[in-house]
Image (tube, rainbow, N blue to C red):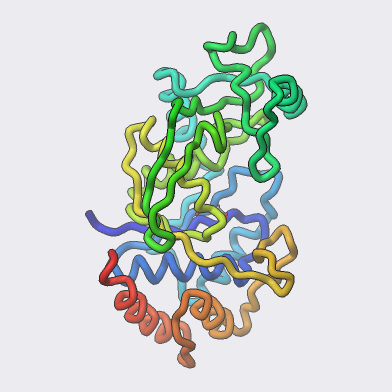
Length: 295
Ligand code: GLU
């Protein structure tokens, strides 16, 4: 199958050194496999999006020699696709409406005597599952995916190796459509990766733990599972992951080679002194050599 990769930033701010690592790695992996590289703007979480950040990200990538091989796609224009996927899940009993507020969930967890937490997010106790009585007259707020019982997902990451997660225990029934009507990342990313024929997902390691949820959704929707490679995270001086939330600096467009060299270093690639296009060709060869035996 022809390789198709993608970079899928959320336009919540300009690219920073951490996001460039994922962009560069996905581009190099696509080129090293003679594949196609796509850009997708993940702007479904509209309250977090910053007007103009999408254009700025595209400019920053272009300055680094990274341009989408096909027209850029904006998730905010793909409502109908996500709705069709949700409808399909509902029709097969794989999704159900949920009336619980955050407080309802906390109360139910406390009452059960087993508050379970994951990354500060409560594991949904299944209050609105049809077998537990469903909405019981309450107004629906969100839609949740019905995680199959004993849903242990085993998958192999091309960099991190074998991974495993019991999604029912670790995450629980997760949101597909939020109470504010917005599509959840998990549903949108799975629908779009399939709709765009993505065969290889290369993205930051902070997203690795979403993969089992995405694999479950792919299975429920009858969609193929791409190969996954999660790239090393760039840590700031405080030892924390660089992110827009903790104020990572925007990439300096006036010196794309400095930005590219820093990203290449994070990927274990040698520094290069050329201009971006020549450097990218050199790193593509390095990448092809370093990944050839395993992929
Ligand atoms: N939009 C996500 C982010 O910027 C990335 C999603 C993905 O690559 O799967 O964190």
